[in-house]
Image 1 (cartoon, rainbow, N blue to C red):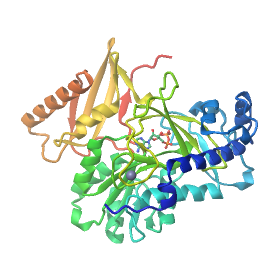
Image 2: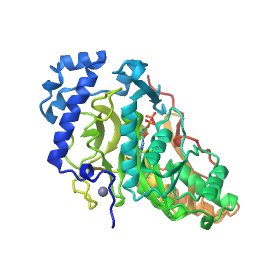
Image 3: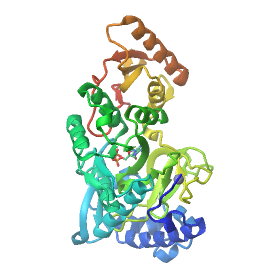
Image 4: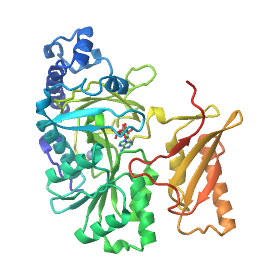
Length: 437
Ligand code: ADP
Ligand code: ZN
């Protein structure tokens, strides 16, 4: 394979040099953070009074974790480390799990972010002649502007299409010869369903690549999008606390996401003991940003579950790879005492070719017990009025899910394109059980 690198000297930097660079940038971030009262008091308690108290990367462990609640408590300006007149933009998390958190940028922070994003895109083989249609929400959400400015930095022609409205998306693709798209994986599947409905021929489109991220999805979903849309799908990971997209991205090998270690220090911990897991084991990703002055954040507990690859990547990049994020530690459902991750159900559904592109998991109380219902769309080759194949499919889904999670669900089948689709991140679970307080 012909690999291409946006910044070869940094992307292939020997580990020892990379770690020296990390240490230098970490000290710089400590200097920025000491301007905020939150970190000043945290650092003082940890015996860190100046950047010089950090002499090796091991000193990071002295700094306590930062949680989403810390960021919320600091709302709105508690984590801002520069005068307001030097701030040029703010972004906020999409608030999937509660009150949003706010991040500020100065001009240089934005430039650095665009550079990381360009590095990600170039690393998938994009060139300046690509036409990039960004089919994700603009605004406070970081996926829109984050990807947009990276595409421009790389020199692609960027179409700021925004989310939703598939007919308009098809028109833009056809008018301008779009070659690369960015969307959530659920929207990409929806695009395919709508293509069928609208009678848009694949041959009328020039798309070759899709960046898919902002929500968890399985390898089966990737394969499904690739085979339905005839594109290469690259996994894109980021979170607004760490700027947004551009934190970790797949290279042309499509096997694990390189985390840019000159911009972030990644740790993986056991969420219960808070100790680091053994190399290669799954745990919670903890991130420290090294590429932003206006809002320094140390050892942020992402709640995202992943593991480091232990082998180097054939592409030659020295920055470590993360496994596909399967979900957040707080995504886990406990159904009649059994732990279930929505991603386990997704894997079963998206692996069956008779199943359509959208699904919904419903958990409710049924007397003293919990009841799990899986609602899923059917594929274009099955018809709603044909009882025999429908019942056979229902049975098959039920048995395969039971084999995977040890719970037998109720299964409801719906016509393709009929289950609700959200414009932002997909809402996959409806849990109507009363919450214990
Ligand atoms: P919120 O935390 O409100 O959802 P963000 O927009 O910052 O706000 O979302 C970041 C989160 O989205 C990540 O922490 C992760 O849980 C999820 N996410 C982003 N990209 C991916 C991906 N490629 N795979 C799995 N999950 C992802
Ligand atoms: Zn690689």
